[in-house]
Length: 58
Image 1 (cartoon, one colour):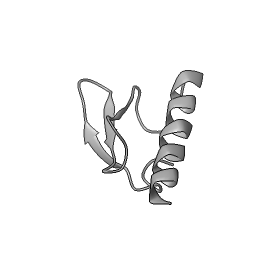
Image 2 (cartoon, one colour):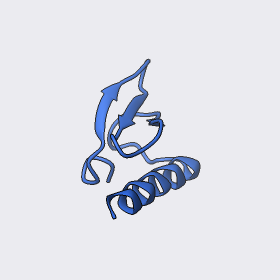
Image 3 (tube, helix red, strand yellow):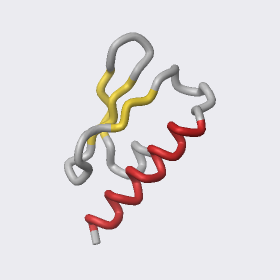
Image 4 (cartoon, one colour):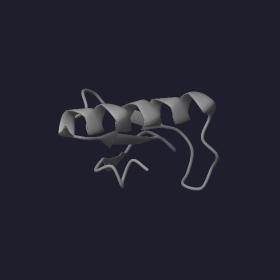
């Protein structure tokens, strides 16, 4: 979802990944490997980040 919304992935420490977007202040950090189920708070953070980017794209 983040990649589709234009975020870029940067590897982080261990199994963490940092997702950045020029229109999003800060970053979204997710733990776990691709394919793992996201935790509810991570799902909420992703949804909110995508919402912010879409609003700023206007």
